[in-house]
Amino acid sequence: MNEPIYITIQNDIKREIENGTLQSGDLVPSENELKEKYNVSRMTARQALNNLVNDGYLYRHKGKGTFISKRKIEKNIHGVRSFTQEMAAMNRKVSSKILKFEKVASPEKVAEKLFLAKKEEVFLIERVRYGDDTPVLFEQLYIPVKLFKSITEEDLKSSFYHYVETKMNLQISHCIQSIEAIEIPKELTEYLMVKEHTPTLLIERNTFLTNGRPFEYVKSYYRGDQYKFVQHAIKG
Amino acid sequence: MNEPIYITIQNDIKREIENGTLQSGDLVPSENELKEKYNVSRMTARQALNNLVNDGYLYRHKGKGTFISKRKIEKNIHGVRSFTQEMAAMNRKVSSKILKFEKVASPEKVAEKLFLAKKEEVFLIERVRYGDDTPVLFEQLYIPVKLFKSITEEDLKSSFYHYVETKMNLQISHCIQSIEAIEIPKELTEYLMVKEHTPTLLIERNTFLTNGRPFEYVKSYYRGDQYKFVQHAIKG
DNA sequence: GAGTGGTCTAGACCACCAT
DNA sequence: TGGTGGTCTAGACCACTCG
Image 1 (tube, rainbow over the protein chains, first blue to last red):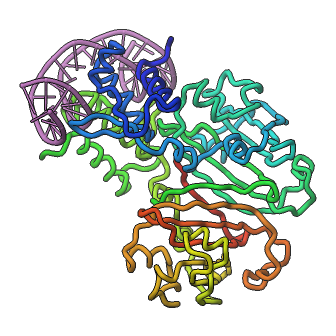
Image 2 (spheres, chains in turn orange, cyan, brown, purple; image 1 turned 90 degrees about the vertical axis):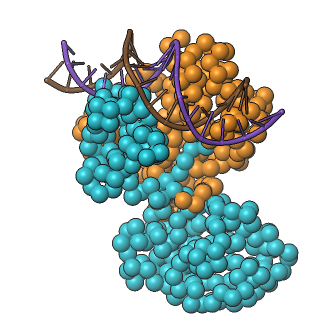
């Protein structure tokens, strides 16, 4: 395995939280216990715990220990959710059709959003996504080639975020998005099977990893009659 | 000083970002440079930088260095923002016209959202809100009478959230909102000064205090051509 | 006093990037 | 090749909490 040890420790603990072995309020093994168990230095065990604290899985109490935080389920509601998660929440079956999957020189705006040099290569992926076989969403996804060297069409048939987190072991942190109501662009009417002038939700999203770097810029066009964007937001 | 060294380093860098000495895209001193400058170990310098990355101030590039990220001001955007804040961010002057301000028996759906008994009294406030004198938003706001006994029309001319937090000393915690694209309802065309069928952003929001109780339920209709909803969301 | 997390050191090897 | 960040070690002292 080339996976860093602290990632292994993190994943082990995450798994125990997700399958219920560790419950909200439970004490997690101390840094010294993890040090023994994984035969690593204390700093390495600490790094794993710190990352989980930053991600909201754990909290610490000086002199007492490290504990599982509440949330867990609520966590899925906060903020960024994938289309797949949204549809699952509504009990709709998801499918996708990929219309385009090619390497292109990044347009200026995209390069800026992805912190790339001008014209640096990006994958441009266009797909239509369906809920219960009705088209819901047309999406243009831009991702840096240098980061996603080995991605295939197959990987995009289901959840891209899932791929990023589990296959690539990257940690998604946050996004900045804008949401507006527009008339559907003419060229999309046939993909979404609607007539001209249909109200459409346009969401532009720039999503970042925990290392502070963006990994996607995506423009999504949602059919107004098929999709309602639900979210849970925390005041800041 | 009892302040940990890494906090000192963080604050020094933050200050340079805030006063403009370090600008978006600039290279921050490397871990080794900070190590020399502050006469600390590399891990300590690294801890300072890592924290700033987690807080969104910096991003890293393996082999290249650590850089100032764009955001900075956008950081305030996390989650719930009031219309007033949104407009201020765009440098637009805000004004309001109150069309209706009355006590009504709460409709069933509203009672449910506000945790009230059926037909318990609520204030229904309808207002049009303007940015630079152009109508941007028509809003129906429902708030419990028992909570806002002494509210006046005057209090609603500017930010309602500001009133809640500073005049009533309540702490806003979070909201659940749905966002969808619709055609403008006929009866609103004149308030928003648009023609029929104009794409409109409908946002329904249920907002809660830190004590877990809801204090408002609001339906907002935003002119699609005037308003883009920008937000910063954290992955859960 | 024993255990915990918080801070810190002085090294090390690696992968990545520019030149 | 030299500089950068990414990972990791084997120690150390401290402040806090609990019995």
